[in-house]
Image (cartoon, rainbow over all chains, first blue to last red; front, side, top):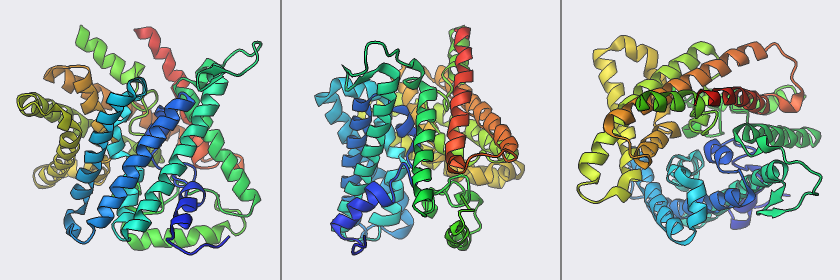
Length: 250
Length: 190
C-alpha cells in the first residue's frame, strides 16, 4: 500500500504499524515496562501519553519559526513539561485510582524519548496539521503496544482482563508475569514475534538498539555522544538494508 | 540505621533498573562493552548524587516557601539539564582526567529518566536533604551494578548461537528478566 507522504491517514498508519514506537523504534521503554502490570494501566498510560504527544507536537510545530535553533531543546522541554503538569492535575482530579497506580510515571512522561524524539525529528520541521496527526498516530501506536503488553501480562499473571476473571478456575495464575521480570520477558517475546513475522515477509526487523543507530534519528541515538557525526549514522542506515537482503544483518 | 536500610533498599531490593524500570535506555544502549558500561555507571553516580542534592535544596528553599510545588516537574528537568552542562564545563576545565573518563556519557544523562525519577521519588517520600542525597547515591550504585553485570553477560553472549528473531533487543530483554528474578533474592535482606 502506497500512501502520499505526510497526509493525516499516512501519519496514523505510520505511527501504528510502519514505525511503531515500541515494537519498531524501541522508544519509551521505561513506561512500557513499568506501567503494563494490567490492561487498564497500560491503556491509561498510553492515552495520557497520546494527549501530551499530540498537543506538544501541535504547539511545537506552530512555534517552529519563532524558536531559535540553538534554544530549541529547552523550549521543547518547557512545552512538554507544561502539558505533563496539566495532565498530572487532570488525572489526579478525575481518575484518582489510575493516578495512584501510575504514580511517578506520569511526571516522567517529560523524559519519554518518544515525545522529544518526535518533536526533534518531525514537529520542529513540519506543518501543524501533519505534526498533529503524527502525534496522534505515534500515540495510538504506543497505546496499542502498551495495551497489548498489559493484557498479556494481566491474563497470564492474574487470570483477569480489566479486572474480570476470564481464565477457567483450574488455571493457576503465574504471578511472576505481573512482577518486574514478566515485563522484560513478555516484551522480549513480543518483539521476537514481530521480528519473526517481518523476516517471513521479507522485511528487515525492527531497528536494533544494540547495533549502531538506535532509533532512526540522531537525537535519541544512545551513541549520540560517542558518534563522530551524522555521516556515520547515515552510513549505518544505508548499510543496514543492504545487509538485510540475505537476512544477514538481523 | 534507617538511612542504611533506605540505601540497601534503593541499591539492591528495589533496584532502579531491574525493578523500577528507570534508566532503561542507557541500560540497553551502553551495555555492549564492560568498560563503557562502567564509565556510564560512574557518570550516572556522579550526576545522580549531585542532582539529588541540588533538587532537594531547591525544592525545600525555593519551591515550598513560594507555594509552587506543582512546578517541580519543570524545575527538576531544567535543573538536571543545567547541572549536566555545568558538570561538563567544570570537569573539562578543572579535572580533565575525570572529563576524559565521563565526558562522552554526560550528555546522554540529561534524558536518563532515573535522574528525574529519583528527584521526584525523594519529594514523594518526604526525604530530608541528607537522606535524599544518600538515596540518590545508593540508587546510582544499583544502576552501576546492573549495567556492568549485563555488559559482562553480553560480552559472553556474542559467542552464543541465538535464534534469528531473538537476536539483538529480544535476547537482551530476556537476559534482563533473568537478572531481575535473581535480584528478587535480595528481598530477603529486608
